[in-house]
Image: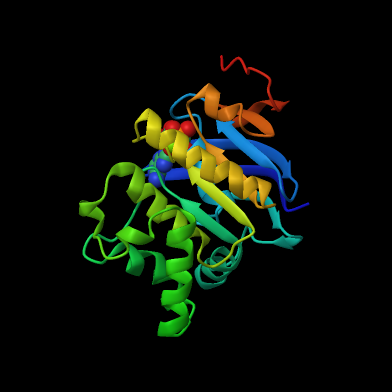
Length: 232
Ligand code: ADP
Ligand code: MG
């Protein structure tokens, strides 16, 4: 099992107030699965994705990633785990605006200590894989939304992670770009990567091999491919 969550809880402390965002999540995801998370706004999807993506830690519970407990790792260990195993794609792309597409894609390799020549070769390779090598020297503001998201996906892939996660990756995109981005995720799934994404769009969720519904910090439905999931 790639991902095993047991009774995951997340409480945010806001001033004197406590916000319970996750109320006991149990979830197993196998290697190579393609899971789509759906659910109303505020139900806890991003909180769950951030924990799955090793961007944040749960307040309570167990998270085993490839058999190793990661729920309570320190910042450095958590970042190492993330860089090794997970590529994360954000709704708003999170590209650095003052450097080129190529340099954005190469950035995780800078952190990993990979040398200049190999960095550039690998960044070009993944830009080509998302159909954007001819935009390598463009800065993010010289690219369309769909192109920016493809750069962000190339950046997520550059460390060759086995798991790709995305939080509403097509939330800011038009229909055509959405289709291009989804084709990339489906290709990654076919190549054997584990893919987990959050989406509001039922047509996108139906591409997945599994659809999960999050409500009030819990998983309330878990269905297989091709089922039209009733999200209420
Ligand atoms: P979703 O992605 O499904 O819209 P979130 O995971 O963003 O839901 O939010 C779940 C709950 O946690 C909401 O009530 C939200 O207000 C709260 N929340 C999310 N992030 C934070 C945070 N950083 N600090 C405090 N509360 C948060
Ligand atoms: Mg969210």
